[in-house]
Image (tube, rainbow, N blue to C red):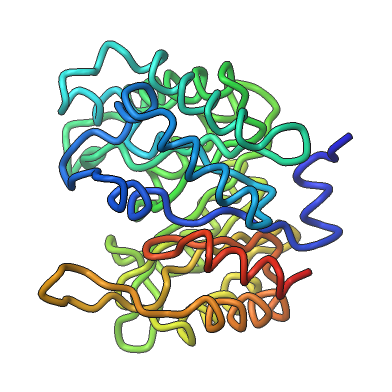
Length: 294
């Protein structure tokens, strides 16, 4: 019988999966399309991505639900089908993971700004997040991942909404960029302030994913900074496959599986408890990382 995720990542490094979006693009997904629709219309493709990561050694599989809030789905005319699409996302991940791993219910940004920069109140946003999280839990999620956050207030609202749904572990990760040698979110929030807000809101696991123009060395430095401010909480890090480069064929990430494997060992040495990948990573990358960590 599998252990509780929090217990597991405190005793050994847990390998999370990698990018979903770039993997679906290889199967025909077009930027601007609704990824949630693939959970039904192209469910075998989504399942194949999940299964490839699981077979590569990833024990923590993330649902295809990044744009699954009512506010994001409304852009595609699907705002009244939140429960349906998120349940399907969790069920697919659960099917691929089986009994020997965990499903991360993925919750991304709601797509706008809270007051006073925008019109959204924290009360309304909490309801939006809770609607999605309820469905992810119903579909079989073992934990909630609040990811790619820039605004600590938005992250805190999602964390509190997750805690209101039930007792599942909640992870919160921010996307950082480097400016003047300092890691900050797009909103200008430092690592210390972002992680502090997440912990105060009740996050069980904290960290970072994605990142703007960060090198593999930058991710290692970010890991060390995260570990310093995370206190007793496990740290999660999902780096991109290096810094993206624009080519005639589009955006390209050129870090090799071997380079990502070496990074994974450095992240473990820095005290990261859950290691995965983000943009540009593939089952090949995560397989190399999992093998190195094993």
